[in-house]
Structures are given as structure tokens and as C-alpha cells.
Length: 257
Image 1: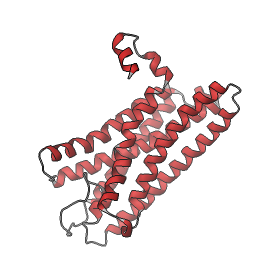
Image 2 (image 1 turned 90 degrees about the vertical axis):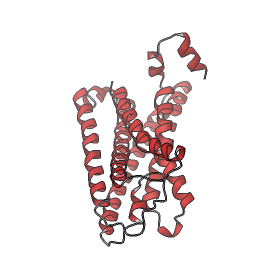
Image 3 (image 1 turned 180 degrees about the vertical axis):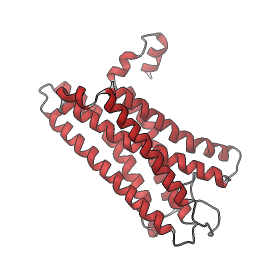
């Protein structure tokens, strides 16, 4: 079904984003080093931006999927057929690739003359721009502003979709049905809001309020927390997915946890 198809794509995006930052941070912590090569930093930035932008696109598509399934159920098969889902997923992956490629090429074309120490546990665009002494960084800032505008538009679309969903849910006569819908939709919206609001603030906050502890906290909130919470919210709270799990003692033990 479209829901599980997009869940698969979201799981790949979450896994990719975690694998981009966490293993290197763990390696540096265990071996008491802070080094990363120039090429490694560029690769890390590319994949991080790629998976994060892919996640934004997929969350937007999934909110549309939920909107159609709840508000326009009779049109669900037409609007979200297998070909339409494949096209939307392909567009999300392709746009994320181009977006990451533009940012990586633009960021690493700047001369870095203010040292080589990044105030972050991974290569992040705002931290790299702080090391640049070229006025060309304004070009990257402009690209970031456009990207934030697109992310904000996605967030508005997601909120609008959930507002329509909530309006439809409130018309459900069964209190149990309303509770089930709200218990599923509200965590989705909470994680999306946390992810996009902290990411947008990270890239738009003025330098005057920047500090090492604040930058670290914001980066953790948008780069590690949502990918860790998404499997819990989108999978473990999904009754259809629970029903697919084999009914054996091992999984009974997992359910007790």
C-alpha cells in the first residue's frame, strides 16, 4: 500500500541520516580525536543534506497520503495509485540529490581562511560558512534562504493537511475512533514540527545569539531526535504493521517492552 511504500522510503532516509553523522562522531569520541578529512567532510555534508531534504519531501508526501485516505477515501485509489506513488518517490529522491549537490558544490567552492575548527560534531553548512572569508558566501546564504522558504512551504502544507484531517476526525461519531486518529496524527505532527522548526532556526538564527551549546542542542534536535523517533511513531503505533508481526514468543517479549 502507499503508506507502507512511503514508510520504507522514510526508514531508508532516517537510516541514512543517522549513519552519516553518528558513526564518525562515535569514532572521534572513542579514539579521542576530532579530525575529519576535507573530502570526508564534503561527503558527510552531501549525504546529510541529501537525507534531510529527502525526509522533508517524504513527510510532506505522507501528510498528503493521510489527507487523501481520511478526507477523500473514495478517490484514494485514483490519486495515489502505484504509478503516482512511484513518481512522487522518484521526484523526492531526485530533488534531494540535486539539492544536496548544489549545496555541497557551493559550500566547498568557498575559501576557508578562518581556521579549520568546526563548532559541531559533524560538517554543517552554517559552521563551514563561519570559516569563510570570501564574500561569495552570500551566494550560499541566498541558496539557504530559498531552501528554508521551500521547507517552510512544506511545513505549511503539512499543517494544512493535518488541519483538514482533524476536521474530518472530529466528525467521527465514535469516541474510540477519534481517539485512535488523534493518537496517531498528533505524534506525527509533533515530530515534524520539531524537525522543521529546529532546522529552520538553525539555518536562519542571527550570529548574535549563536553559541556552541545552543548550536549543538539544535543540531541534535533536528538531526538525531526525529530519525530516532520516526520508527516508534510511524511503525510501533501502527496497528496494521503490528498485525503483520508474527505471533511468537520472541515478539511477545518485544511487545511487553
